[in-house]
Image 1 (tube, rainbow, N blue to C red):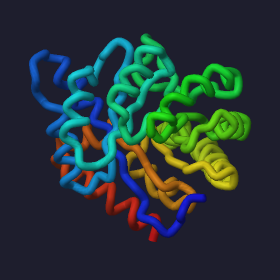
Image 2: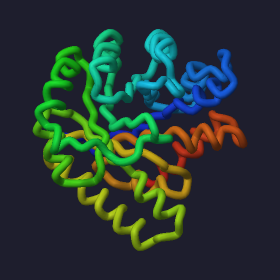
Image 3: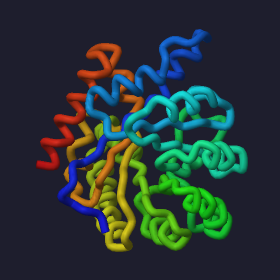
Image 4: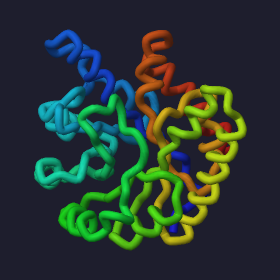
Length: 250
């Protein structure tokens, strides 16, 4: 079972530093440097999503992150043979299995686990055997959480996108409903012995209610922090997020 007494961890996703680099070509800005700055600012881990089309993070970024990082790498990936081979070669601390479509701008929605239980169980088994901590990115849905537990995942990451979108749109009824569902499903996942993470779309306005869930032990935040770094600098942007998380938990 998760230890509630521990500090709420912050994982910083550096994908969109690579997006900016790739928009022009060349080597700058360097996502690995961003990861190092995030470490210095208090990030507890770094997340990077190697997509099939390599739209932001590329293979050499993963190579360099594995060589450079002092904090754990959370390797986000689709459930494909190619990505499994890459993960098994590097053996990152954690792998997070996410849905992926070429046409989407970002990861929309959680993984459909219940419908693909047998396939996913076979897919994650070698990753667990290699020592990777396997996380499944899913919506706050009891059926999906139960299926993630059955297939042997150690962690779930709850998709917070619908909650954040409703807040941005001023639809506070939907926002509060989504928040309550996440609260209930965090407790349910914890009762099964799963470690609970959360992320997608979180910002300074939306982070505190999620950070206050006692069962959640890690938040993964990327796009907002990289965007805010344009105005504040990456270190101060992360430090402010860290402050809000700690205040919510206290």
